[in-house]
Length: 290
Image 1 (tube, one colour):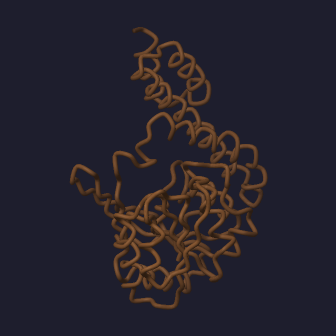
Image 2: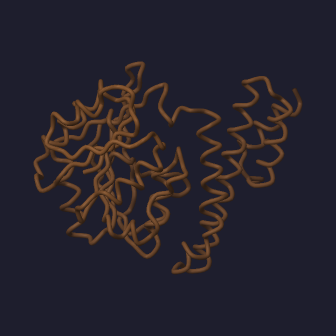
């Protein structure tokens, strides 16, 4: 089990306790303190786990380092502010063993800072390709993922130079030629804070666009090499379209900041990449006529 933390001393004990409350017990725990300025490491050391402290390098660097430092055959990720249900690992490893999957993930409850609780109930047929778990958007919640460590290392590991969408990149490089599986049960309580990366606005969509255009699209011939050409072409179109949607979202964020010039430039680029997406057109039209 791998957990990276940055200034999470107030939450990490609950996350770790949920790990040690698992009905499946054959694991060890690695906690990577990513340069915290609080006492996250001291809290983690109260548990039976190995604690590694490094200078702050961001989420991608932390994920990459944990894959190198971990020793188990399988890796399960958990964020420092999330909670696992006691049967999580047992359910997932049962499915991993029976299906031969390289990665197994599950559903969750999204716990918002305003007290709202949203259920995530994903419906994925057993027969779908591994890429259907991550396209057109990433359906794999990092804190629900269990995967084979050696396979992600052989595939290239997580990208150390990414700060956001880091897990998505890891699933892309792991997917080719491998099976992903989904447990249709809510096994994680996933905390969504106003300050979380998923709510980071412009920066999040900028990171998404960077990942798709600079990390994934240049490798599509390699990533989709084993797929029928028609399927590979469909995924390529989806990737380009998603890149355009990310640009459109960046443009909307710039509008909110009052920078209409930058927003219009981003809207034009978005329209070129995603000309068939209605919301890209409506966002652009709203900006261009104002």
